[in-house]
Amino acid sequence: MTPNRIQVLDPWVAERIAAGEVIERPASVVKELVENSLDAGATEVTVLLEGGGKQLIEVLDNGHGIAPDDLSLSMRRHATSKIQKLEDLEKLHTLGFRGEALASIAAVSELSLLSRARDLSEAYEINSQGELSAKTFGHFLGSPFGTRIQVRGLFSQIPARLKFLKAQAAEVSQVREWLERLALANPKVGFRLLSDRRPILTLRPQEESERVRAVLSDGGDYPMISATSDLGFRERLPGSLHVRIHWLQGMSLPHSRKLAQTVNGRAVRDRVLQQAFLGPFRQALLPGQFPALALFVEIDPSQLDVNVHPTKTEIRFLESRRVFQEIQALAESLIEKKGAPAWVPGPSWQASEKPFGTFQIPSSQPSFDLPPVSRSVDPAPLSQNSQTEPPPTHFLESARFVGTLFKTYLVFDAGQEMVLLDQHAAHERIRYEKLKRSVFRSELSPSQALLLPEAVHFGPELKPVLLERLKWLEKLGFEVEIFSEISVLFRGIPVEWGQDLLRVRLKNLVDRVLAESEDTATGTLSPDLKMDEALFERLASEACHSAIRAGDTLDRTEALELVRMLFQCEHPWNCPHGRPTTARLPIGRFEEWFHRRI
Ligand code: ADP
Ligand code: MG
Image (cartoon, rainbow, N blue to C red; front, side, top):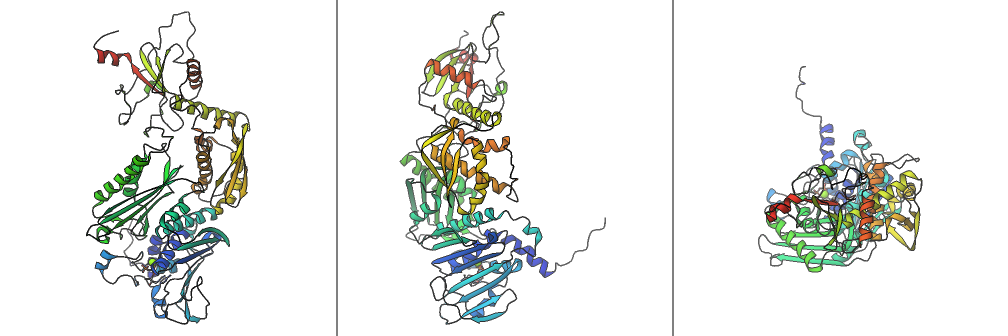
């Protein structure tokens, strides 16, 4: 095959390829435009969407505006008012600096800019073709000056990009999430988002902690716990670092979308930062659950590189280790000082899904007091059965119940080994499989009425998605109805669900039902959708909070009944979240410790 000859790309093609780095979807347009409004000193920003942003994205602000001469330049690539020379990056105080956003947006849409600069009496408008005209325009969000940017037909010329856009509700959600992140970083600024004229988000100017609550909380009245550290930031010492964390205690979610990071006023997503503050929470929350938390870092700009990626959401610290340690220590102090939520479930390691014969006890488990058992335990004969007795129905059938250890572990003498059973994990497994059986064997699960109905909030743009999916929940045994534009009301729950931590679990459940829309490219599901196993797993893992908790002491009859029910399960060795239910200590280990053969 003869290779093609090298040729310089047509500028039209090159321009659109470059634009793709900055503008991926409506949310990236909104992010760039709102960042410009913030750089212009706006105190009010309004975003309007039509058709999820595909038809129209409009951003209005009351910032200082753009002078008519600058209007035509503003859409040129590498044209910026924010830096002049490379060294300016060292003391950057604006969100923008690459001069790429407007040029990129103009390359993939019909863009029009209307602006009145602070010292001028007239507004001017420019379109994608560069045509400039004077306008008489009344006001921008109550201010005589400001800017209005309209983006129409995003990606209409680029079908390859258009087809990657998700359903309208999912795109609006992403816009809302970006706006919320920018809003956290700028609490003094008021924000509004409307989608097809319906209000989606309204945030008035607030103090930082109020803004954190307004954005992160789901309406619940969670206590907010904050911690601050200051390494010479107030004194403006070189290399100074200032960190604040606000944590909504007691709110936990099955996703990481309520983890907000702000560095020097810039909403970022940084893995190192996330690891630093999440580490201390691992012990406090169930595996797979995340806290609701906002991190604010202020650092000497010369210690920070924000020019890592065209979208500027990635950053690099000169001394990342120091920043990491400072944040980790602060997050630790937050948990230690105030105590973790009362339902601390224990270590967050993942156990093997393997059945009994090859069950593995993880070696790096931090709070497991017993010495490590051999990694692979053969299924030993469980007791000396005489020939005539019927075979046992499960492996603890003929084991002797010794008692309860630490109010949590049931201890059994199984002849050739000691078996420990985590009563909490065991009950979770039993409950989960019972729920599963009731869903798959009979059509509807029986539900149990709630004395006080529970309301759960969701983003208003997601109402149509939720409406379509309520039947999944009904099938699981929930009695649920749409209550308002932003809430559903649970009147009944499946009998197997239990009342434990109901609020958090119902909220998680709704999140999971909605999250599904983001997995599918189109976001639409066939109306006669069948409950499949994978879907069930996703929804029902919230069942994993049992009435029997670590700390409840079971009597002998209750303990034996728990064991009997556990071993009727299809997968008795792990709870639905993957934690082991059972640990075994063979007699050989005792013989090693005490130097004797029994
Ligand atoms: P950058 O933000 O990196 O400078 P942009 O392409 O986003 O690049 O914007 C180009 C220029 O247009 C900015 O430097 C700024 O001077 C001007 N500009 C854009 N949006 C606004 C706005 N909403 N208010 C005032 N000036 C704006
Ligand atoms: Mg910009």
